[in-house]
Amino acid sequence: MFGLFMFLCKIVKAGDKDLDGQLDFEEFVHYLRDHEKKLRLVFKSLDTKNDGRIDKQEIMQSLRDLGVNISEQQAEKILKSMDKNGTMTIDWNEWRDYHLLHPADNIPEIILHWKHSTVRLG
Image 1 (cartoon, one colour):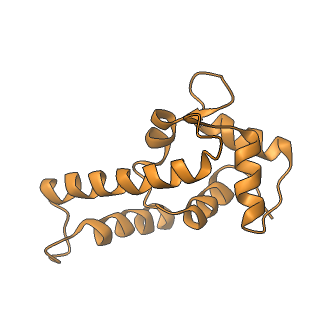
Image 2 (tube, helix red, strand yellow):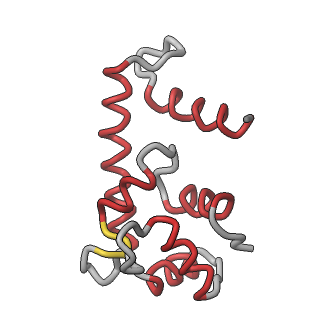
């Protein structure tokens, strides 16, 4: 329950433009648009093959670049958590749908989210 509270606090803090401690509809829509733009940049940085999809090797390499080594099985588990159509790749829509309501918007934060929600990354 505490985790959900912290999660919601991060979203309110990121989107509360008038600093009234609340997130009205307009602020929420603005937050979602801004967050989606940031997620698009992260997606493009992970899609090193520039084919519009993130595959197991790209996940493993991105983590390796940050000093985190994972097995193929761990990379597959990450992919399966987002892959809606069974291709074992993640397209932009799958990526966005998975991450849009989570406040992580950069690679280290997303990896932390994966670490706690998907697999043990060490």
